[in-house]
Amino acid sequence: MSVAEPRRIALFRHAKADWPQVTDHERPLAERGRLDAAEAGRRLADTGITFDLALCSTAVRTRETWKLAVHEFPHRPKTVYEERIYEASPGELIALLNETPDDVRNILLIGHNPGVQGLADVLSAEAEGDALDRMHRRGFPAAAFAVLTFDGPWKSLEPGTARLADYWAPAD
Image 1 (cartoon, one colour):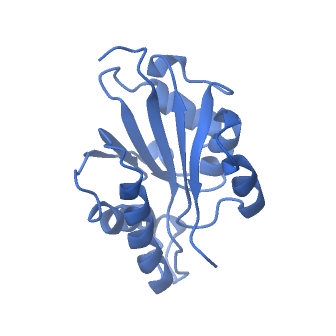
Image 2 (spheres, rainbow, N blue to C red):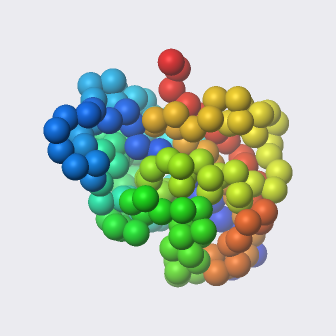
Image 3 (spheres, rainbow, N blue to C red):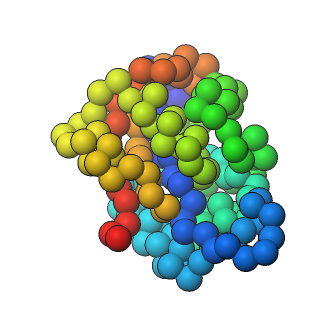
């Protein structure tokens, strides 16, 4: 694959979590979260993107979100559970994405706020249609995702190098 071909990154926030008496890392999805995770999976599948790699936080709620969403995909990407995504800043997430081998074209990152929303904001130099307005208006609620495109090798991904191509959030 040529590094000149556009790459895509889908930034997917975990679905709504419950608040039982467990550590934050161990919080499971709420019932609403289970429904929204599956719907987000259908919406991601509808984008037509074939993801080569899914990077998922090790937190229980992100793993459960991914397990429910991926069942909606026609092709299951290789999945890597990455502890560095949990509580990561946008800069730390960019550093993680910079490590991606160049034979990977499309990545899905399943993570947490404020890191995921911050990453979408910092990477997006421009947007298609009203995607950026919708994202700024809605924020990045649980189970929301943003799809960004950029050109070049993964190591060149940095603030302002991507274009926001799509944004979706579940209905309140």
